[in-house]
Length: 255
Ligand code: COA
Image (cartoon, rainbow, N blue to C red):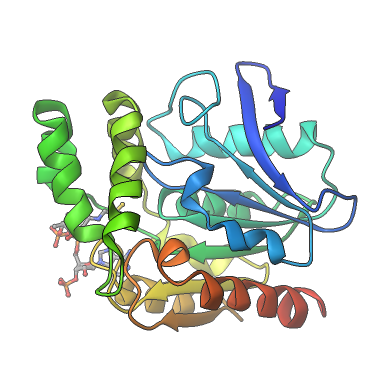
């Protein structure tokens, strides 16, 4: 995986179809890494960049406990990679980061894709407090809430391995950042084309959160993925990638 040096840390990222056309940059969720996005994402007809946030996966540096601090890192990364036009996608915490950047409206931002996320992301105290007192038990609890009914045992085991490989303080910082996040009153300020993806079996960020985003962001479109839980991209990769491709062609292509 390529590495880029930012002011405070080195950031590792996966890349598919590199080129200098409009790019898609995807931000993973709490305690995750680039591995939270499905391999099939490489079939999208655009350059796709998938970084590990600081302190996660193979990136250096340390995690942040504030969404706007992560937004600073992503903005610095886009500038360092010299990406002129970007559609920013984010899953869960990553979706909060994408909303924070959309509110800043940098010139390079062409649209956002909000996956399994909300404008407010309060976290169950059993998760937030439990991570520090009982990491394994709490990862188990989160694991029970991550998936819809069709997820395989292999997929669940894969997600658990990523969760246990992430230092517990990093995951706790991420959930703390989510717990503080609330841009519900500011959604009307988001002006870029927006796709919202929700899983109808998502227990962590229910469809209700997606509907609230759709009502608040003018011109946005919600697509509900049936039978999918919070990890909808890994659970239903073909439908997930097709929705993103459709957004790029129909909503972004004409913008
Ligand atoms: N979009 C739309 N509605 C939202 C929302 C969002 N982003 N966030 C909260 N709400 C709604 C809730 O559904 C609730 O509606 P209700 O009164 O009709 O039931 C209301 O706003 C208040 O909810 P909340 O602010 O979350 O406070 P709470 O004290 O009721 O619940 C939790 C706190 C942590 C129990 C709850 O937020 C929850 O179950 N969260 C999901 C699990 C989780 O930890 N997710 C992790 C996200 S990263």
